[in-house]
Length: 383
Image 1 (cartoon, rainbow, N blue to C red):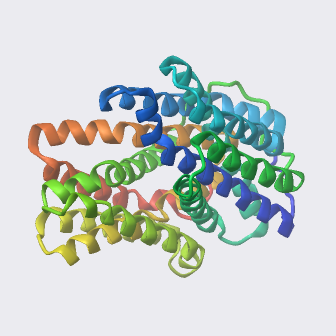
Image 2 (tube, rainbow, N blue to C red; image 1 turned 45 degrees about the vertical axis):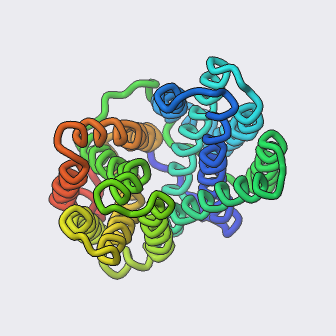
């Protein structure tokens, strides 16, 4: 079946950006609640870690079904339902104190995040293809801005004295408002609908999923272990351990917002090639050098390098015809999420066996492998 072609209006482009913002905003809002939830339930770090796995588990199990749902119901309905699920779960995550109930809500929250992630990327592919110009990096940049907005809004509300329940309800109202504004402009289509729920991924799709797995693994390592590395290996004061992630996140957001111009200038394969090598060099710098400024520069280089690898990989999904687009996006997204989930555990295991420097150094080798695969994201169709 030929893909439907829709000339994207400005409203459709802005509604796509709204979907990316909502996903980043909602996930980061919950992240700001995690310390309060731990104190509210009076649980240790081990129990909290298992509880947080529920969110990732919900996201991953939603992926195989998300592709079929998107194809059958369209991006508009999928984005609306997943957004409402996020908005309805957020206040419950702040209110519940019974661990099993919170685990179920986190799993449903993960289902909403995973479904929205798949649907917004399918819609972004359709809008970008119809516009005939690079847009994917900019969309993912809006996701990063949403993350800053969600964490900042929740933290600010809590700081001025709002209870966690009222703060989360306020954030949920923002999500509902954005959904109300953007839903009418979201695309009704969602790709080919005549395919089974479970489709065996093609080798090319697995390769793209592997690229996303390694990139998400690297991002997750900086998020979860970057501060620990600075305080334990580079002897930063505990109060300053977060600066590495701040520089990483800021560099990634800026480069994503500039990424569409970079794609026009360099091409997609060069973006992946040089981006992965720059990120690899960042990991090499932080594990081999002791100078404070240069080590922090290494974190920024990781953010610069990783920024546009995933957006460019998603674009390649829109150029292939070996799998239905919505299913391919769901499969690659699931592999990426798996990398983000496995990251903390894998880094922790390697760190236990040989130290954090060895763990971070291993990531530089994986990123070099990504550079070797850069030709697979070039602008040509795969059949």
